[in-house]
Amino acid sequence: MFTIDERYRGLPANRDQVLALHLALNTPHVAIPGKQAGPAQAFVVGLRGGQGAGVFVYLYLVEAGDCAVYVSGRRIQSADELREDEDDALAFVESLGFMMDNANWRAAAPAQQDEWLKTLPVFFREPTLVPAVKARAEEKRNVATTLGRFLAAF
Image (cartoon, rainbow, N blue to C red; front, side, top):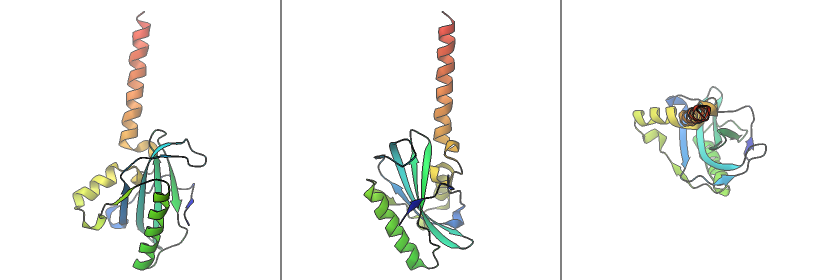
């Protein structure tokens, strides 16, 4: 059973900590309690930590630049438990309408892994730090400044 854990805003990790990564192929409209409803991306991530491993479901609300992190609540000690929690997490996100794809983290080249760590919202400590969100915010500021200058000219 996966439940929202408000303490998490992102899952920053290094390559060695990531055990598994699954990415959504679509962006369905979802409603998360306490969050603005809208299109979302889903990620299922298995991470190794100091006290074992854990599987997380990370939902990134694209338009809101917000997220929700779901946790299973148990620390995984074996490969079988990891697969079991991964399967549960995938079933959970698929029940929300996501179509998931295994990124095959372990088979990916280190350069590809580094690219994912630098660009996927799941690996950022705060959703507002995601490059695409920062670029969108800058674009909005530029439009507002240009419009203000245009209107001031009249």
